[in-house]
Length: 280
Length: 71
Image (cartoon, rainbow over all chains, first blue to last red; front, side, top):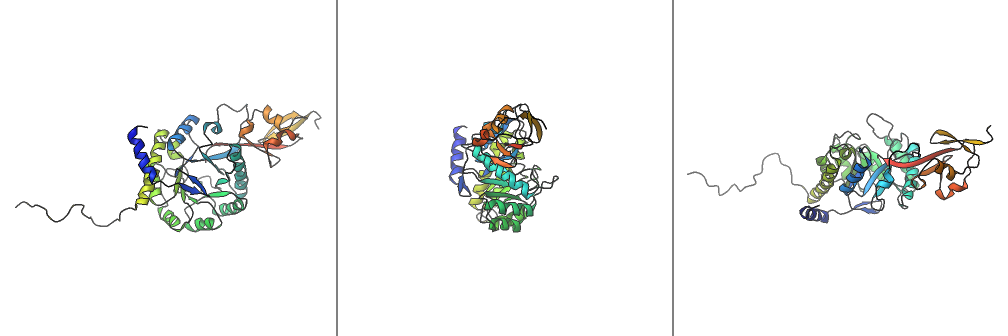
C-alpha cells in the first residue's frame, strides 16, 4: 500500500471506534462469509485484504483421506487474528440449529479460541428465498442463551422480532437486507431504520448486499456492522471488491457519525444571492 | 453376527473395522486430521484426549465434523 493511501486510512481509522459484541472488541465493522470463492487462495486473499476481524463458516461433515483433494479452510486462515463465527447454515429447525451451534463452539476450541461462544443462528426451512423461521429462531436463541452462547440471530427485518430477541439476551440482531446471495441490496430500508432506532444492541445487517454503495448505505443508516459474502466472492475480482468493501464500510460509518445534511424539496443555493454583478 | 469385524457408520457411510480398533485408530486409518475435527460418538461429543480410550463396538455411529467455507 503506497504512502498516500496509508495516511488516508489512518485518518479514517481515528474515528472508527471498535465494534463491541458480547463484550469483545473488534476493529473491523465488515464481517465476511467464507463461501463461494473459486479457490481457497482467493478466499484467503480477499479476507486478508478486507481487514475483516470476523468470518462466518459452515459446519459440515469432514472429508476423510480418500475423499480429500485440496487443503482446507482451517489451514488457510490465521485464527489468532480472525475470530470464528460458526453459522448454523443448513439447519431447518431449532433442534438442528442447537446441535450445530454446539458443534461450532467445539470447533472454535479446536482452533484455539477457547472462550469463543459465538454463534450465528440460522433456522431456515425455506429453500427458495432462504428466509429464516422467526419462531424457530426465537426458540433456539432462548435455549442457546441459557447454554451461555453469544447468539447473533439471522432474521427478516422484523422490528418486533428484533426487540424480542434483544430482550431475551441476544448479543446482536442480524436483519437481512434482501435474500442471501441475491445481490439485491437494501430492500427493507424502512424496517431496518425502525430496528436500528429501537435497538440497544448492535444491529448487523446481513444478506443481499451486492456492491460497495449498498454496504456504505447500511452503515449510513446507523447499523453497527455489515456481513456479506457473495458480493465479494462473486465479484469479477473478489480481492478488489474486498478492498472496496473495507473502505465503503468505513466511509459509511464515518458519514453516519458525521450526521448527514437535511434533505429539502427545493434547491438551496450554495452561492450568495447578494452582490451579483449584472450586465448594465 | 461377524466375529472378526465391527460395522461402524462414519458420516453415514458403513465401514468394517477390526474388533480391537479404538476411535483414535479408526480416525487415523481413515485419514482425518485429528486437530481439525469434532467427533460425535453415538450422538455425544467426545473430547479428543478420550479418542484412544474408546473401543468401538458393532453398529457405533460417528459424525466427524469440521468447518468449511460458507456462512
